[in-house]
Length: 72
Ligand code: 9UX
Image (cartoon, rainbow, N blue to C red; front, side, top):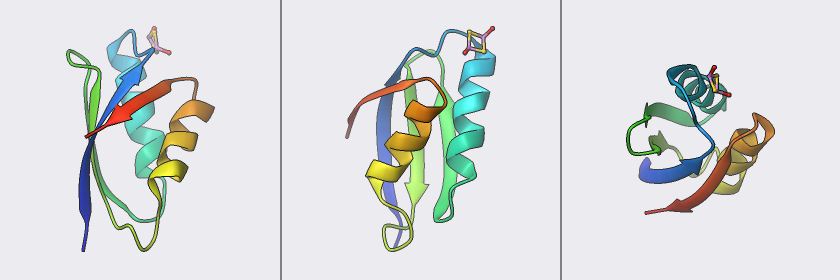
């Protein structure tokens, strides 16, 4: 069963930043969907927790140069 999380991410300045975040997160096996809202600095992510952990998603975003700060 998939989980759905809203992740606040700092450092996304322009629309291409949002696209970059979507690209790196989508690439992870177990991520079903990701949509970044540049206006709210939030990424809505659906993922299968048996395939990918939140810590791995955060780490991929950090590696791309952005900063995940919280989820809810
Ligand atoms: Mo836009 Mo983001 O020119 O790293 S791609 S600021």
